[in-house]
Amino acid sequence: MAARTWFITGSSSGFGRQMTEILLARGDTVAATARRPRSLSNLVDRYGDRIWTAQLDVTDTEQVRKVMADAFDQLGRIDVVISNAGYGLAGAAEELSDQLIQQQIATNLLGSIQVGRAAIPRLREQGGGRIIQIGSMGGQYASAGLSLYHATKWGIEGFYESVMKEIAPFGIDVTIVEPGRARTEFVGGSMVFSDHMEVYDGVMEHYRALAAGDIDGRAANAMAPGDPRKVAQAIIDSVDITPAPRRLTLGSDAYDMMTQSLRDRLKEMEANRDLAYSTDADDVVAARERQQARASK
Image 1 (spheres, rainbow, N blue to C red):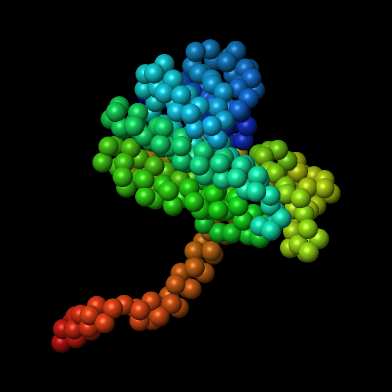
Image 2 (cartoon, rainbow, N blue to C red):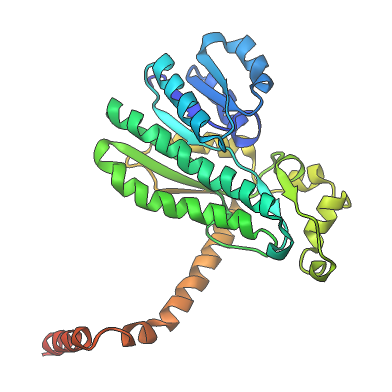
């Protein structure tokens, strides 16, 4: 298999770090971006010019465009762009400050959108490539206390559902990755907690305990079912699948919870069928009835 060149956001920790290490070890080239690129210095020392690093805060749109352009210009071709940067925000909707809401949307949703928008023209010009958006099982179901996190993850799925149809004619494929809980630094290091209101203590008990340190974040991560190395390898391996999978569900918890959520939503949708059809215009209803009458003869 020929070596590839990859662009990864959020490569200093979690899945981003795991993917960067695996790719470099097997001989690929990685444009590894992070808010603190010094955390990648040991990889630079080991792999030299096969790792290209840059400081990148995905909430800075101009910086996103510049870093993406620099990476393509200096590396010549990028085969795969992985939009991975993001974090979790815990708190009931009423508890969240405007600043917390804006930062969550700016990072997880707008940042991911702008990474994709910066990559698409360069991928189109070079004749194709692949975009991998790291989403979450929280993009298909929702739990109390993570409303803004879910909003961003559901939002980015909707964005790429549309975009993948726009860019397919140019040979650009998109895969949305939906991992479950994995043994990364997510709870202890990549989650932000809001101030709290006592009225929500019963609903937010678990997150209150995490925020207060009554539940050790590292211990909570260690109990997650997902192996981050296996998740990272599965994401990398998906690039060899043709046609590209539109979604990649990783983790038993992701599969079980998303499947149940989708079944529940479909059941609710089916219960609304008669009501949905009843709101059609009279001429549409009449045409449908004539068609059904012809079909029954």
